[in-house]
Image (cartoon, rainbow, N blue to C red; front, side, top):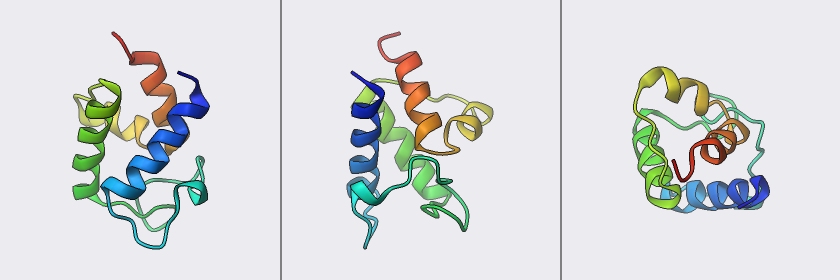
Length: 88
């Protein structure tokens, strides 16, 4: 699985699983913040769903808040984490 594959799967999963209206997977900026007022504007409830999505689709767990803060900065950092930990 390439980083491009992971980014595409993440964008599609986030848009569909988190039910983001008016956003197409191809429109998601991989460098934009996932949380807060900028970027996708996800909130804490979305974070829980995102953890479940990553576990279900990629088999990668995110166990602690410190790791989650770093990993969930944007899609790029999340894809890097998934690639580093998939299959471990």
